Image (cartoon, rainbow, N blue to C red; front, side):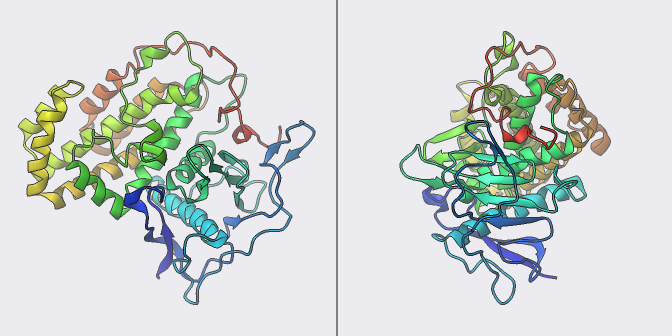
Length: 418
């Protein structure tokens, strides 16, 4: 049976390379989706007259939660064959279709890695998840029974997050972790739990973005396979041509937080950086398997990493190798992507939210590699965690109360008992 077509922007449309959306096919059988779009697990709305986001009201007198019962913009409807790719940017209907299509696309990816349906955290009390667009919200949240998208007004005009694949995928990553790992007990939660959450959400966005053919092709064409160049993949939730919220290819080490931490976004970076380095090393291993690079080139990359010689020496070697085997480079990157995605899904299913710390994540990730390959990638996995001080440094205390911009201190952690 044929799936349903949507037009999605792999990266924000204000970037020149991604001004046009890419047509993707999601798993929903053509004709099975209703207006909204909607299905039996989620529905999308663009509310009219919604004055505040879900959560506690500014004066603390009320709690707003889905479902929204007020007026909404006219829903996006499928064409005669059940598809939504006929919609063009610039209308509320395209925004709602883009939001729904992105969530379904990302869930398809991660349900494949998990090998099963991923439940919503709110399944016991809500029939479906509400996907909501609220332009007045200068943020984006996944919460109990909803994902709500605002927009960015800080960089020259309004840029809706409902059209930003990375932001939607990041929020969906939080929803997956709350479902699979659980909401932390406020009396028994570590700072590393919050850092782990942000890292996992970034990784969901990063791995999911590598499922766009156009992004993978452009990435390899621009870098020639040298993924340590600043590129589309390691820009998370990109807001402009030259500014990004966080960079996965970072050099942060856990030792920087031995005396304590303030923002969970910063605390997440050593873990995210370790996993990005693992992705690169897996990519190199796959290139070796395909005969696209030599063992000597792979060894040299390891030796020069984090030195000033890496860029000038390695880029020339990558240029030549990619020119000789572009199709092998693409296959190797897709293989590395799927290994990382599968390992992450297996790790998240095993991890315990109580007293969670980064070394737990590392040890379970190593166990997963043992189960899949007998430990083929143990050396590179352990080396990258060691490089980030994970397992060698204990994170210090929380130094300041969580700020208003903290996602750990937000509607994400509100459940009905609250």
